[in-house]
Amino acid sequence: MTSYNVALNFEDGVTRVIQCDDDEKVTDAAFRQKINLPMDCRDGVCGTCKCFAEKGTYELEFYMDESMSDEEAEAGFVLTCQMIPESDCVLRVPTSSAACKTAPEAVEGEVLAVETLSETSFSLKLKLAKPLGFLPGQYVNVTVPGTGQHRSYSFSSAPGGDEATFLIRNLPGGVMSSYLGAQAKPGDQVTLTGPMGAFYLRPIERNQLWLAGGTGLAPFLSMLEQLAELGADQPIKLYYAVTRAADLVELDRVNALAEKIGNVTVVTVLAAEDEAHDRKGFVTDHLSAEDLCDGDCDVYLCGPPPMVDAVRSHFDTLGVAPVSFHYEKFNPTETSAEAA
Image (cartoon, rainbow, N blue to C red; front, side, top):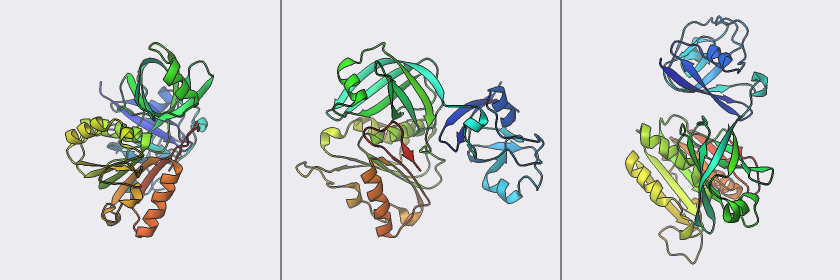
């Protein structure tokens, strides 16, 4: 029997991925998996279950004008009680996960390997008890063994597998950094809770400008891994900005994925004045209106708050606004990310 993955993105940042069988309506599939999507009539009449389909193909069996207009349907709105997926889909649900009687999923993981990539970063590889559904770009909370604490990290691996990787900044004295640097060993048990976040790859319909600061490269690795399998028709330009050349970790992997996809341009920028490099300074020193395709592009940015704020201000200075701008800020000691 054919089945499709339907990602339900709730307004509180929680994502749950459900399996929808062939000819099964989304509401029925959600109820079967103990997620109570908003609903009153089940007949396409009331409009209570209206959501927005960000990705995927589907059939809408029926809807009344009172519940949803033809213009809304053409724009991508759906009634989940009448929606039958014909591919994997992503739905934006205009309510919280708690209101739908669900919560982030918890999955156990086992440490497979920890690698020190540079003085500033680690790679963490986990074996999952079961695949955890997520969208490329999203993050999870990862427990730190022996501490009772957790930290939030974006996946650097493709969705759908039973192994997951993370690119983690080395913060001297940090809870996770101290564990990874001196205590971690294969077989250690961790718990992943999520996925969460509004920073994830949408359908690529126009030029892409991706901006990664330091270990903010992680979500872009996940995106590239998926696109290496699915392909992309539009050009993608990835700026990877770090302090020193030694901080350009995973660059071989980035270039290999870019070559496989075929239309990805990778640009590196170093901030340290004493480094020899073609592009020095900050990413805003090199971004032009041409990079923004006069606004006909989608921008994705993941980096520390000063970088996010500087890029937003730079766009204002250039007088160019992209069609969409998705960003995620991360702070060194935070346990959750700010995304938009």
